[in-house]
Length: 231
Image (cartoon, rainbow, N blue to C red; front, side):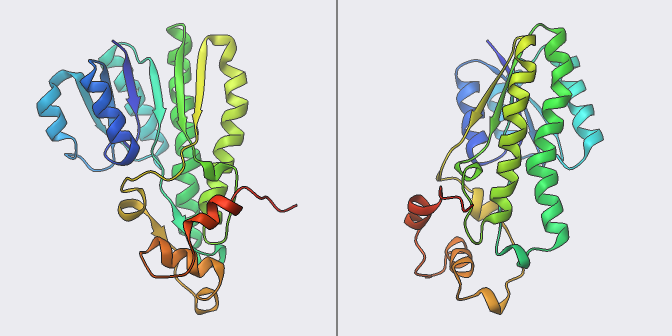
């Protein structure tokens, strides 16, 4: 039996991971932004599931929740840094506050969670960090530049971190999924304030697609052109 600490465990990929781990008999320390969303799982699995409210934009809360998890559970074998969301629209359309929150959550939140568990991993002789990134960490397209840039930052930081912590028997895994049928967009996406100037551009068509519109833009465009970086 292993013990997993998972951020953003209430939806999307993490909710599926959480249920699968509980089904096989592992323990899960699940952190969520909205208390109560995992109560059904709690009733089904009892003490196998440990819950905590966690806002990844709150550095003090990250440190406190990690400390409490290790204190109450004794050991944590794997950290799954999953919590993230997408900010869509042309770069000019997003507000400063939206951009800051995107990086506070996707980049700094992941880094702070990893940095919080590292001292405990060293003390217990090892551990494993699983960082959920994205294929978007390797390309950027109009309408998705801010989300992609947050994933580029995650990729750069964790590629270095992987080599830095290897001498301490701490393993790292970067997961780079493509599109998955979850509530990632419908439930968690944030959009910049649309500007008329961009409505008929590639960025505007992409936003219409993400919002369920009938734009001619197709996801195949991302698959065909998404990995081309301009010099």
